[in-house]
Image 1 (spheres, helix red, strand yellow):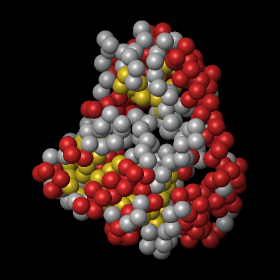
Image 2: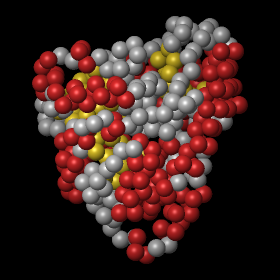
Image 3: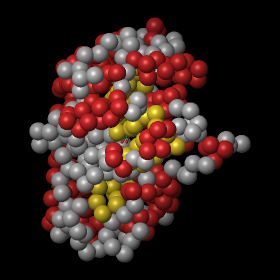
Length: 388
Ligand SMILES: Cc1ncc(COP(=O)(O)O)c(C=O)c1O
């Protein structure tokens, strides 16, 4: 038995990719997997030790606090102040999440009604489109301007009237687009004007290079009245499997999400929250080596593509390269050609919506030498592509 709403949602593209990878491995192929963006670097020892200590503490093995562990909230409040100079009231403006993907989906399910519209970027992380559908609402794609900002003027008046929420994600997975605080000011003003909840997914807040520091929407004066921001330990701290994240900002949205979750669960595992507490407490020492490794990977990958005549630009943030698929291939045709030929697994652009069609994504989830080899192998399949 499957609900009508769930049945109406197309299969998750990463499942399809998993199936193709598994089939190739079952046939004895050795693959370089740069498909899914699951960090491969180790969790910092100070975080592992905190998890071990938490596991041994009887008092932590009962049901967790619904909204969040006070120790986690204290660490996150300090982190937001140190990192962004954003002051939060931990009693009203924070909630712990078992991952920002789940949190964002739950926020949508808790906040919108059938018939409502959720505005999302045309090229998007899949949950932005899928959660509204699960809520019986409509996800409407907002086209992107050449500089990566949303073309807000392109939203149809009727969609804008029905819209309850606008989801943004800078630095962007998969396009690697970034914005300055001035763009967040424009988005906050737009949300105020149209009574929207502005939801900013800041999953890549720390993964930026060459001196670029990622801003927070909550730095905009008045943003707390219309915006929430999701942060996660998955990428910055290599903790994707721990499932710990948080949402900060608008107190009403946080209250709504808290109410929703009380009906279906028990809050986030206290062990995970203690791991998150250690991570955010020690962010200033944990993050720089993680970023240095990603920068080395980015440079190895970009350098190898350049050496093979691909005129690609260098991303300023995230852990991805987003490239046009060479002429003569469609999305799955290109993915299959790379698996069947040199044995490289990449993500097809359609995983990120129709507007992603014609591109592919490479994740920096292998050491620099393996990434350089992957680039050489990819380049060997075809001739150079035009500049991205
Ligand atoms: C933009 C974006 N948001 C959220 C997530 C998922 O984060 P989490 O592990 O916190 O659910 C990802 C993972 O790739 C992502 O790219």
